[in-house]
Image (cartoon, rainbow, N blue to C red; front, side):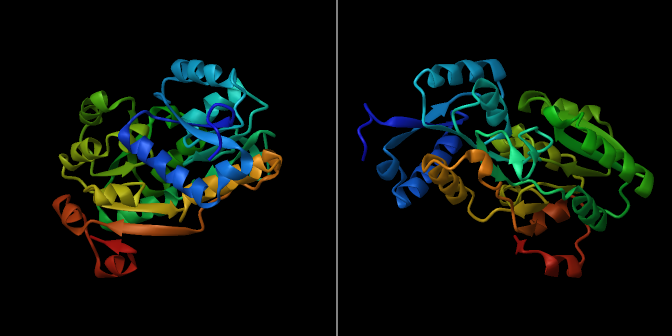
Length: 301
């Protein structure tokens, strides 16, 4: 292993909690498998900070940049957006569940800032998700749309809501997720809904069990963005699946450290989709579960 006192550091920036540290441990293992530290003379280091607190994250990154790190690994949209505004020279390897073009990380999937390489787990699946929700809750007309506050005003999402409201006669009740502390009252303020369309939100990732329990208490059908949610007790999920995100992060970092221009490394994307259903939770919520739908599911709990 390289000497920690002399090796250049690769900074892995994420939330400072057990799950984030477990993710870093998996990333370390993936890097160890390809002898990344040994071959490039670098040392991986975890930087724990609230990545949703932009000023705090900026201060933390500025301190790290004083030491001229070899690279920054930012496994969230919030982290990479701040990081790219702090440096245009230090390579950044990012992971995001959002559209990198909409986030302005890239002009398109082939062109981006020269110090950015990364992985996008985003594929536009909103129409398919709505189709599945209407299949399991065919009478739903008032649909709660749960979205991270930073995406609530996104033009693409606004267009999707407008188009589907007209096409299907839906009344959307948009619930921007500000914090887990306010989430329950925000759901109540949405008023009565027939079903829930849940999208990626940082509060869902950080407080999954509590988040799901708030929705489950309404006893209404719901569809979630990840099979991890179904494992935690959610009703149903449809997601684009990236089979080895951690391995892909390590490979991208390896290429960057080899001297490849990050902007020349293609953004990696998912290649398949997964439908997961928690039968007991779905039935408690009043979801219709046709045999044909269950037969199409990749995972049934």
